[in-house]
Length: 209
Image 1: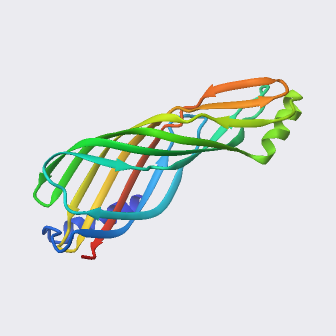
Image 2 (image 1 turned 60 degrees about the horizontal axis):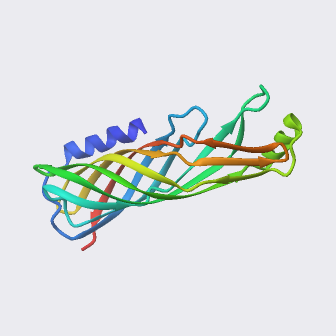
Image 3 (image 1 turned 180 degrees about the vertical axis):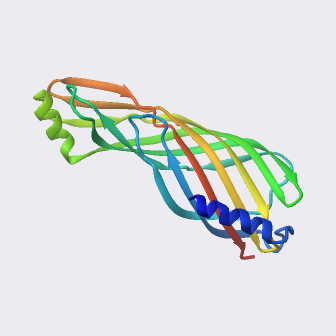
């Protein structure tokens, strides 16, 4: 990740900065990493995704929308034993927001806040039921996760490297707090999960028309 960041900085400095004005739609790819600040929620991830740009950033306020779907690993401790992987929490938000863009030459800097509603599900690991049975004597193991409201402040920077190429760097922090329910013959346990996620993405796009 560090090496790629250095490469993108080098490209941005080396390519003459001219407005990416050759087209209205640009498409490319980005790389990103994410991590969860909570000690009981995992999800450190490095991946490649699709990146696109419609039109060009203009000075001032404006609306935006996003999906920002992600999956987190949830850990659990029982009876003083070693923590184990309880399962995967899937968060699929539909979001809209408002932000302000400031232009400095070929660079557009936008700060915004998105909010919305996330459809949430939980997929327990196969060994979780066995661990509950072994440590607590519990049976009829099942899990469920509630849908939740989400908020995501973020900062995005676009830099026009040429008439065809644009560079983007985006950093955001997703706040998501669904309730996880574990039901067994021992009773029903409910816990609010701090599934917050910090993400950083960098990518390049090319104008296709």
